[in-house]
Length: 352
Image (tube, rainbow, N blue to C red; front, side):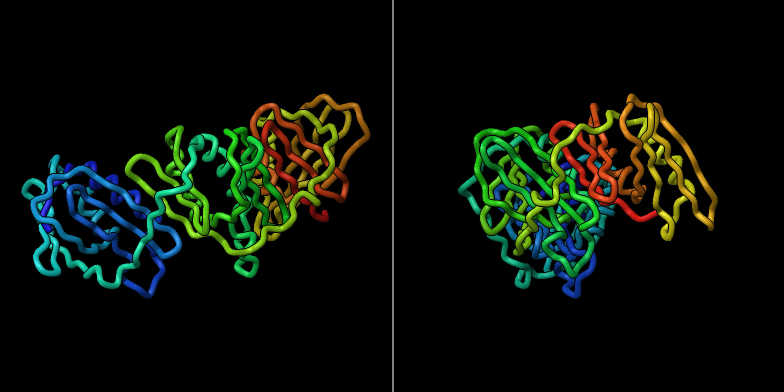
């Protein structure tokens, strides 16, 4: 195998694989990317659950394929200063030349590299920007509890011109909705790592997606294949409170105040007491290890006083994912709701 390629092209291609290749594996080959030279250069990265396939223009002198450490290849390419880089495989050693710099690094045969199946049917177009926004509004609420695999990803479906993404960790529930073309898909659970990689694809406005036993996202010469979580997502609609008028709140003021209160929080003491009374919201927190904090912001409110306690980080993340205008409804000891256009975050209160 021998080819010459622009440094920036191959550097970007390898950089994109770093989030996919496995860092915690007993199989050294999963730390590698598969490099295939034909008329173009194909780079494949996989951890068996997520696979990334990209095609790159190059001048290929000798066709062939091998696998090479993704991390080491990225590190050395980053230091090369020439415009073009030459790759030449001799036996199980890759010689990489850029300007006066020459590197020789070992490769591993492709025999044990996982086979990646690429689907070519069932694709539909979807706005990458909308998909990325839905991911950013839900990914923070995904559970990290390995004992509940059905909550370790976000539920996604399209129906009747609306796409919906939902996540929950049992303490809060985030829902994002976006209007889309008339597309219908089955409900699927996309794992968190897959969502993070999909969001990188969503930098362009229009991407293609296919859903079967896997979720496949395609943009230009790049294809991402994500294995789905084979489980049943809980019936989240039954825990969503009935819509009621919430208190209109300035999002930035709310976040700033919560962050000030958060200064006195710790892993053991992370709650904030919120009191909504006539034309103001008061925040207070007490931590015997650090101290106390109190703050307030002005609002328009003339109803009955409301009091509840919350995990302060949950509220910060909920309001950070909202957009103006935003409302906040407190439901005593029941779930409270942060709401803006196309977004809801239901947060369970805590005992003070």
